[in-house]
Image (cartoon, rainbow, N blue to C red):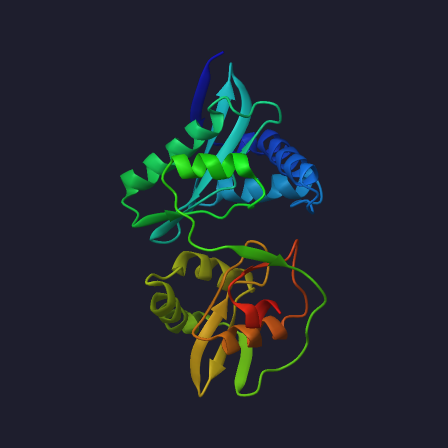
Length: 251
């Protein structure tokens, strides 16, 4: 059977969405974890957004002309982000995932990105093994946190919606904490109206693109992060990722 890798097109979204939903559902059910997507439509809409977004590069795998998987590269910042990568159920361990990963890794190298990052479920040993073979190193472990809104304020910290004129200050926070900004993601969140920030002593000390599964939050202290977490009226989707080592945030 002939395996080919090509760039994803908008008309591929429906098939890729069905594969994505089934793949994540199967792995989660096999390990008794909550499913990532409530239905095929949500997965398809997400992949449609990635395929049509100028800041993402999508590839798919075809086996004898039939789509059997896809992968994406987030090119909005200097550190490229990989995923989601999904393969048709029953076709694992046939190097399809490896070829999809090599394709986006080669793309990142060609584009001159400073690094590549990804986030994966710890219970998925198959993908963890693949990433290790491809040279990825574990940097941190995260817990997916979900529950009712906290609805409280942290003394000395003010949380408000982020505005376009706040972008430079927010990027500076990310640069200070991580050594690089995530300006592309922040810009999208500002346009969508999901970005917020936290101020302390009249200075911006943190921001969030959204307390949700695909958002990210950066702050100069745990107190600043706690202020943003406490201010939201809901944790969207499956929940938010929180680094397990930050005990004051997860306890």
